[in-house]
Image (tube, rainbow, N blue to C red; front, side):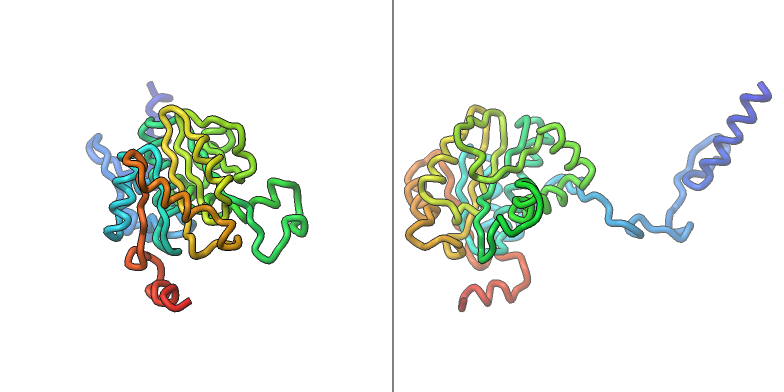
Length: 253
């Protein structure tokens, strides 16, 4: 009995930094009394933010569309949260068990630079183009969990060229920067939709890196708008959630 009592006293002594023992009851220690706050030091994972809330009427419409349709096309100016809301909804669907995986894709369109000039293998060359998707996922899941889900294939991020010939079942698919796809590419992507899957296609027709007659997003959204079972959400300048100057600049640029 003496050894057991000694081990118990040792454990209690080691845990005094995180709890107090009084009359056999545990009491949480107030971190502020110890000169420490949870927000000190490194940035904490943001995965505890379970649900996102719309910041505008347009965002509310987009969230409702994603929860009530299997195919959603959302177009609008930069800063309206198109990509972030789509990724957040994908993560929520995965966490709720509504889908088994997330597939994110965007075109690797060059804007004044060439892929061949970037160092590294193909994956490293594509990383800068896919960075916005990594950032949104990291904000919703945290770095460690994101890395784990990507390693086991639950989350896949791929360029548009790797999507041909696939059927995506039981997945939440986000096609980002769709304004940099041709009409033929968008048609190919839309027909990847499989059973028990949701696809969200986002883009800004006014910010295409392709020639106006080559980008297919405006035409695709116009045609799909005629179908009742497909949601086409058009965000406006008032839905911009970045710095207020962004909305002002887009009206004159």
